Image (cartoon, rainbow, N blue to C red; front, side):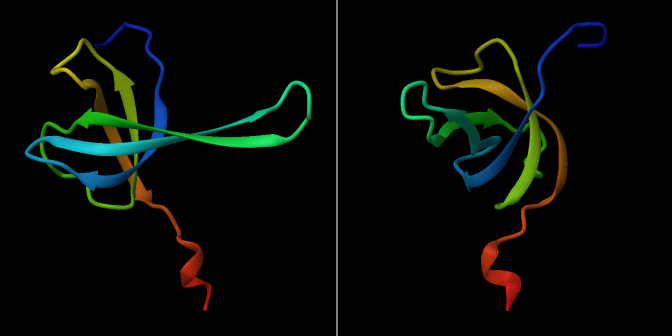
Length: 90
């Protein structure tokens, strides 16, 4: 892995599904070409978590790997703090 170029993406853990597997969502924003409206698109992907240390709501950095299974082709690179929810503002 050292010396290779790979893209890191930031995702949010939304579900722990089995041993060493988490479900994460990747949000993306883009502008519609005709209507100029900002559209939010969320992609859900299965991620390999080798040490089973990610928690729900946690922000993680992931990178692509060769497929581990039918649906898993991403791996956790590092963890950061959890996302702040909008309900905690009270």
